[in-house]
Amino acid sequence: MQKKLLGIINVAFDATGRILIIYSAFAKYLRKKWEYNEEVHQLFIDFKKASDSVRREVLYKIIIEFGIHRKLVRLIKMSLTKTYSRVRVGKNVSDRFPIRNGLKQGDALSPMLFKFCFRVCH
Image (cartoon, rainbow, N blue to C red; front, top):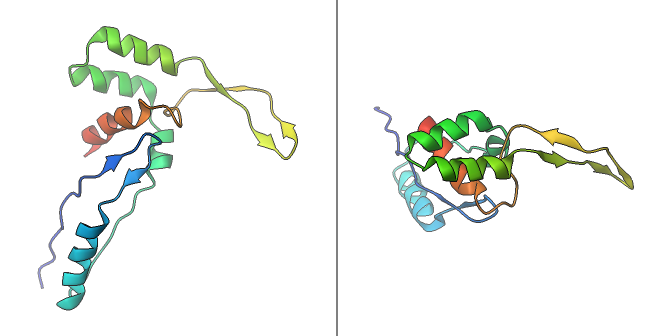
């Protein structure tokens, strides 16, 4: 029996970076496969962890290659540099430490920037 790849399913990201799943289309596909007793293989990617691992210097090169104006790239770079975080455990808060990789969680621009990186890997 020849195995076929369903193909790439396009998804969208909301402002928080979560995936908006097109449930009905996927459920319909699964029902058909089960109806004909065909195998189904699924792959789920943790995009939250993937967006945390984006190397910023690579991101800047990617968006330039996509034709984003250098002035806008500089503004994006300014928003991502000199970012710091702290960790809270119970009532204790750590000293701040620099964040050198990844995109800002909750930033409205982050899902779009991640999409550029994802397109290159795809």
